Length: 308
Image (cartoon, rainbow, N blue to C red; front, side, top):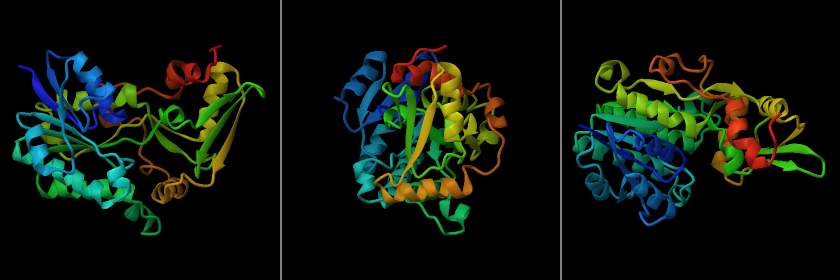
């Protein structure tokens, strides 16, 4: 019998990758796509693919209890750039805790939480980002409440080069121009191809939810392929398209807390020195994709560049 999975942020980047992959395996999983706007175009597309689209708001506990009714599993994520969170950073923590409470009340057996480590601990209190702390505090809450869960570190997204317009092709100068705030050209970021790999890792955890229930419980999985600098990314573009590139670090993102997060990356990197890809993800049978894959499949076409 197929298991019902609730996917938070199902019309977004992370949740969308999970929902779309699970919808390809309807023999094993049914998808309840949670969104604040079931009438949006992305929500309607998920419904056409077979998802049960449900209106849910992480700020409304009663709403969430109903949304998770009957669910075996949950993919949980909060979005710092949601206006409700940007205007009140502490809301991200409350939303995550509301989701955990609803999961516990409904007897959810496998809760997957997209999270980040403590910026306070990493920096010794010098660089504290609410983007990090809100999610990290939910980790503590999950452990304290003994919620059966797996934690996913999702890193920096290759897709940001497209979604946030970090990279463009200057046809007059015949070069690729990479603009990104704060990050130095030599800073290594732990990178994730969300649309290829986040859904695959999440499904693998659900697939092994029974056989590896105890070993996976409260385990952290690094869902990133490799640590790359902006110059490494430009080198891949050069290798695959023949186009030279330049990198320019902008002074600010326009969001102070995000600036703190990027400065943390400059000073401390991402996720310590753990070897990537994560051996625990490899053990689940997931093959992680890298920058060359993303350039071939997404970035080069987006920039209007032909592959060599």
